[in-house]
Each structure stands twice: as structure tokens, then as C-alpha cells.
Amino acid sequence: MMSQAKSRGYSGCDYKYEIGFILNDTNIYSLVFREDFAKALWGEDISLWEVNGKGVERWQRYLKFFIKANDKWKFLDKSLG
Image 1: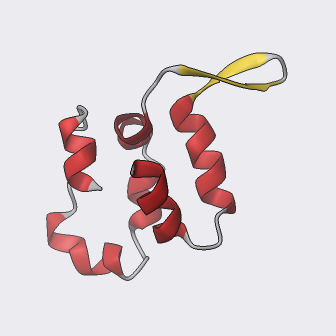
Image 2: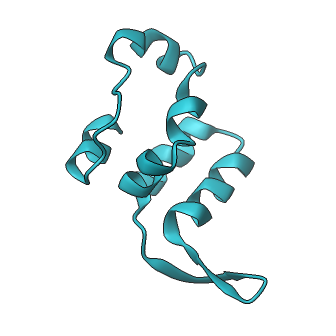
């Protein structure tokens, strides 16, 4: 996930000294919900999905799905392909 985000332009902290916390599902939220990280993962293009008549950026759409996913890791694995 980190490699994919960095290859798509994410330049923020990589939490390399906190990997155990991320793998244990603790800090994944502080990373995934960063706007710059989410944009790097899922892109900024406007999707056909609309909220209140306005196009929603792809990364916003995927964050909504991420929030609702029962298995967050499985969702990330599938959505990042």
C-alpha cells in the first residue's frame, strides 16, 4: 500500500518506525484518512458517483467505502488491485 501511494505521488511520512502499529490495525486510520495519502492511492479524478448533485472525487468515494467495509484490509487489497 505504501509503495503504491509513493509511486503515485505521496511524499508524506511513511510510518516506517511504526509498522507494527499499522499492521495491528492501530494507525492505519491516521494514514489512510490523510487527504494526500488517499489521493495518491485512489486518484483525484471526478467519478460518476454524485452527492447532492456534485461529482465526488474518486478518493472520497473510496474512503466512504473503506469506512463501511467490515474487513478494512481486505477492502484495501481489493480496491488497490
